[in-house]
Image 1 (cartoon, one colour):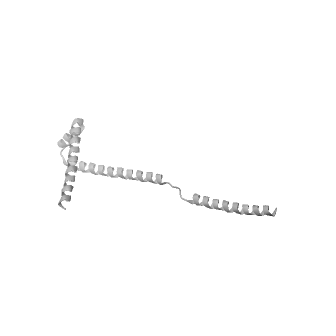
Image 2: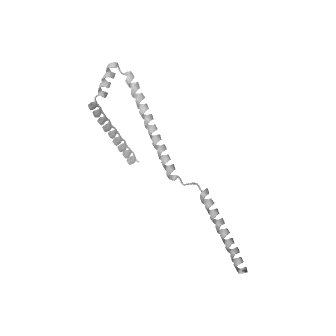
Image 3: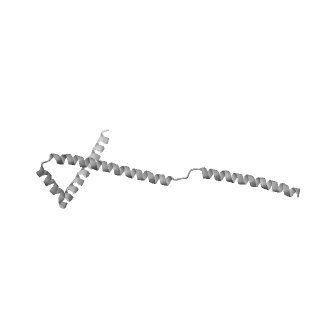
Amino acid sequence: MLKLKNQFKIISIYLFVFIGLLFINVNQVIASPKKESSDKKRDISEINKSEEKNKKQKEDIKRFYTIHKEFKEYSIEKNNEIIKILENPELMEILKQKAEEETKNLKEEGSSSKQSDDSKK
């Protein structure tokens, strides 16, 4: 009987220590911050996209005002000619193609000038 009581005491001590360690470990896990890295990455990408949209809108507004200022300086006849050109879809397509070609040419010239600068060094 005495041996059985000692075994119960030892088992109860081990059980108490085990449960205590379990609760200490669980509290540490519960207290740790939640991992929301995917949410943070998604938020950052949304912010970057909105910033890019804002930059594009600002550039579009700047272009609009520069065109508007130039448009004010022209005579009424010249303004009417420009409006007719802009209303004609065939001419607009031709103008867009020429503008794209010019931007490509400018980019190519810019890249070739960088190469020549590097070769001079």
